[in-house]
Amino acid sequence: MSEKNLFPAELRVLLLAGAVGVMVTAGWLAAMAALMTAQGYSGAAAPPLATAAVGAGSLCSGWIAAFCKKERGLLCGLVQGLFYAALLVVLSVPSGTLTEEPPLLRFAVLILCGSIGGLLGMVTREKKRRS
Image (cartoon, rainbow, N blue to C red; front, side, top):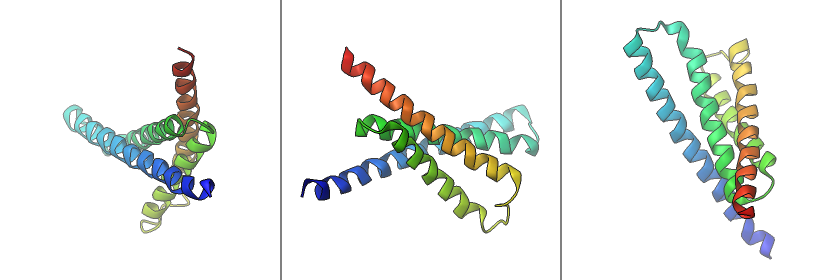
């Protein structure tokens, strides 16, 4: 009975962490677009900057999920990274760039950043408990 009640709460934490990560990604993308405009960068700089922005959002969402759930940080981060990778797949399918190298590299970066965020969320939580 208690497991049935906990599932929606866990799902809410993961969705909340994903939403915060999307907002962080949007903020990073806006900041990097402003930087590209101010500095006069060419369009060739956009893919690495976009990958960095999405990686930052994935890391943040993994950190929040692990920090809020207080357990299984690596799993929380991995789920958040896979969530971001799934969103990227959905957005890449219409353009036909799914099988090229940069999107596949982005998938790996997203999963890695989400996992690192999950581990950092657990480390942060453990330090707070010890104090």
